[in-house]
Image (tube, rainbow, N blue to C red; front, side, top):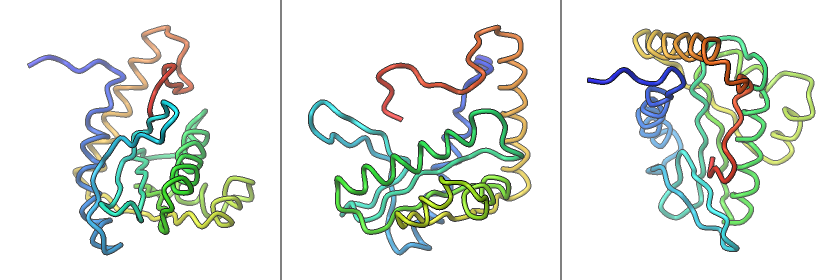
Length: 166
């Protein structure tokens, strides 16, 4: 068995697959990850979308206080929901988070982003993790942070490579 790269987020992606059925049941829709071709060479990866494309979900699997560009990542996920939802005619846009700090940032902060989510009809949902999942994600984040400190990559802000679909 190989040791994962310090920045590997496989556990967080796995968490998304465990959250989707719970969230889908709450929304009355079966959700699955999908990469959508929007035309003009534009492809976008979605954490969850219903078969009829009326429900689109992004999941943010971070626990703890937000640091650095993490608020920007949430805003980007929300903008993706609004953009893709508009293109596809989706009626339900959900940004699911797994911890209180992200939930508060998106729902109660006096920021343009929180106001925009309300104006554009993006629902922010808090999915409570059980103790084991919470501990697992926290351990992954600690490994990632230690790896970033040791890598000297300068990419601590969480940027994505050019051409990324996320």
